[in-house]
Amino acid sequence: MLFDIEKLDSQNTYKLLVATVVPRPIAWVTTVDEDARLNAAPFSFFNAVSGYPPIVCFGIGGRAPGDAKDTGNNIRRTGQFVVNLVSDELVEQMNITAIDFGPEIDEVFEAALTPVPSTKVRPPRILEAPVSMECERLVTVEVGNDRSVVLGRVLAMHVRDDCVMDAEKCYIDTPKLNLVGRMHGRGWYTRTTDRFEMPRIEVPEWKLRGKTTD
Ligand SMILES: Cc1cc2nc3c(=O)[nH]c(=O)nc-3n(C[C@H](O)[C@H](O)[C@H](O)COP(=O)(O)O)c2cc1C
Image 1 (cartoon, rainbow, N blue to C red):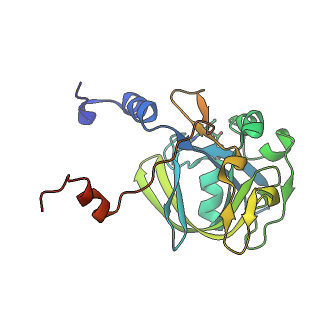
Image 2: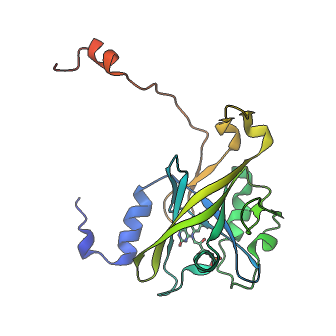
């Protein structure tokens, strides 16, 4: 079936994307406004897009033209944010922070989470999160009237102590992070417990297998 995106409305286009680009990692973004009021919200249009420099990006969409949700509005004004990652134990609390509260409501407090000061940016990180990345905005790309993509440079990373296998070599026990991803629809998620390993193939090995023409 071919879907001609140019003939689809915004809702159906969104449905096609979020039903197929799965699982998506979740950025649980903490920001503050100019008065240091704290805000938290999850964003699954999210990924790490460069290793060095370390760049993460996430997409904010669609409340009203010019309104980048509280998260985007705060980043617009302060240039700083923290991306916390979501483990299985935290999904209910993450879901609370997705409630469409006004800017006066601190979702971190509503979800009974613990904010702790960051080292390089003003927004605090979430203590309970197994990973937190302190970020400064690199650029915000306006991709539509009510949609933007924030690119941020990671300045510092916190990884829960018991998930660090060798701090010097930066070996992380990824399975232990127990992260979840977002699947289709409004309420489907996946755990990261179904894993498999596949070694990469070097050119000589590929030739040995007789699969190349040269
Ligand atoms: C798992 C999950 C992922 C979400 N991903 C996005 C996203 O990528 N972009 C977006 O604009 N909203 C996303 N939302 C909705 C926002 O979290 C929601 O609109 C929130 O209220 C925004 O909060 P804020 O106004 O405090 O920034 C997501 C919600 C959930 C539960």
